[in-house]
Length: 482
Ligand code: NAP
Ligand code: MG
Image 1 (cartoon, helix red, strand yellow):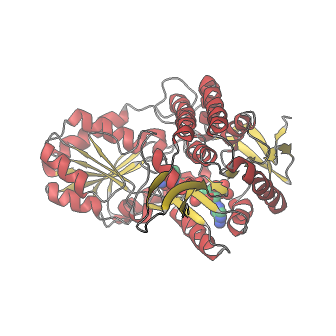
Image 2: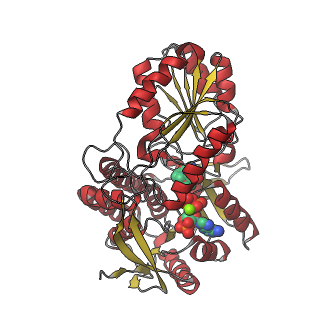
Image 3: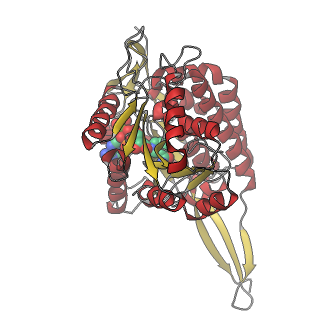
């Protein structure tokens, strides 16, 4: 029996009132670990601890914050292989992807360590004679963080690091499917020198721990990443709470990748395969609609099929594997349901979609590509969140752009073209938060804003210096020196 890993509340590791089992999706006989589940009372304790710790942390110096965040960064990066293995084992992305994500988390902490030193205010002349006007940024208070399972360390990092950087205190609720990376990250944060109560970890379900965070008057803000369905509930709860909470939502996508006749075919195929299928297609920025103009359509589909045949789907921890398993049975059921829906709608399953058997029992699904589809089909409109992509034929650039924007989502989009004219036009007219030219829709930098528009995002952007919009509140002070 391994020990049940605990929650961190008010500076202490505490037992929970239940247990979350962390299962390896590459091998469902492999129990990664057991984690204490917090209940409502423990979540309230964590909120109280964060509230008590707030005044002092809000007044901590930039040097203290820099030191803590920098320490976290250094340890994450030094342990990236070990933590990357844990991440790949619990979530199912491949080992190199897992290590890459851990390194990214470390870089994010380093960036916000620096940001702590860069926060300054503004002072200006008043329109009234003799007065000074000052603008300063203050922390918001206790921030509740609710994160999804698909980036078990990077998403928590890009919320926790700016929250601490700007002087907020944190109650962190990770997704129940991936408590391992959350626990490891939390353990590193607890040793960074921050005072008790500044950071709290509460593992547990959305309906108990999440709901408590949403309803509690002492939680000033909620940063959420997850599905649109949950995002809507979060927004409602934040508005109905008294006082109302500040909130930011990063949600789903149905991201288009346009491939034009003049694209470099080899590059376009690499961009599409990476964007649609890597990380098992379980990225909010995954390219799930491949919109291809007529002159290249058949060559693109043929080259994609060849490339997909060469991909190895297997245990995430094995060397040379391109695509790991689907995260769990319920996500696999959803993927299979959509593959059936696509066929019933009349799209052609040009490749894949079969369940695969490997040495160990895991949720292995062959990457699936639909062709002969149109943008009104459910497989082109609803987020599947698996290794399933739909090729849609377009007459020309104009039609491709129109299809690209014909979606309720707006997270990421991309175009493969060698034309400066079309690339520039697409960058300007694509209705998404992040646009890529000759690059996969997934894959971003950490020092610039991340987020979308339309149904994909709500509220202030995450990451880069823009993160301060959410994690600070502006104060305008007027002084009459007399
Ligand atoms: P989800 O089901 O919406 O869950 C996200 C988080 O919300 C989990 O921690 C979940 O807890 C919690 N939750 C569920 N119901 C809740 C409630 N009533 N009150 C408070 N919290 C609640 O999403 P997911 O399945 O984990 O992740 C996949 C989704 O995330 C996809 O739609 C994907 O596009 C999106 N995503 C978006 C971005 C982005 O930046 N735009 C990035 C990554 C993923 P449990 O652990 O109990 O489920
Ligand atoms: Mg879920």
